Picture 1 (tube, rainbow, N blue to C red):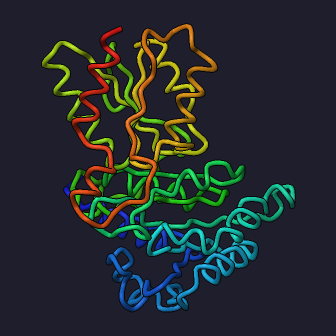
Picture 2 (tube, rainbow, N blue to C red):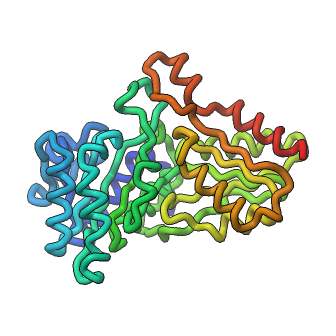
Picture 3 (cartoon, rainbow, N blue to C red):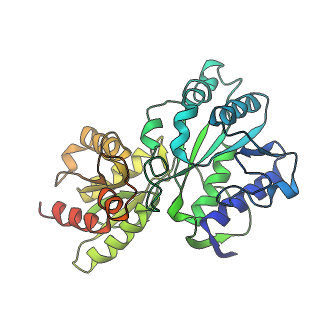
Length: 325
């Protein structure tokens, strides 16, 4: 039976239930044990399993290095990076160790780790705490990047991430933490690498993830009033992408809009656009559109941050532009 739960509560419940099921799962990070995490995501875990919840020094290198070593020894660490922006501090551990262990040892050893990374802008956290970091990592074979958009996805995708043998970067957008939705009480898993067709349509394919999914859903309702039918695809796993679901949709609609919070250059919107242009160009009825942030650091001042980040009106404008063809 489903009941309403917040996005943050769904993640917390997934951790509790998966740690109850599997004694090899443990958590580590800055203030994740006794305090329950800076955002309260790991609350209650230390009280149940004091020997499976570890407060670490202020060192992302230590957190990921320890996680890699523990994974090689057969444990399943779930590490928290308080802000995804600090992936840069432990970049070498992730790209040259986590991502390559299974390949180097032919699967006999691997870094089965989950790195929970708090991402995105919109809450006036300025330059070093507002970035979307998925493009930094999407060029690293061996990594998996997961991006839940709803409380239901948050729980099921985290369970799927913990059970997956690959190192997973699990992105949690700050603006989603208080979002409520239906979440079953029982433990369940959402399959990685599969996109979700959130809404079926025939005129425009719109791909959106995390907070941008809300923009897409609102835009679809608005466009319907004008007689325009929008199909919404939520990738859920950003890397590797479920290319088949996206391309099947674009082949049907002939139009593509990708809504992405991060900067335009080299983001997943660029990859999806290139994929469609390369493989099914003949199906396009209009040039594809990318709705993204500006290619600039995220400012602190609210009016400037809103100017830099993509807004709902930008999505509506893109819909009108692709329908002119």
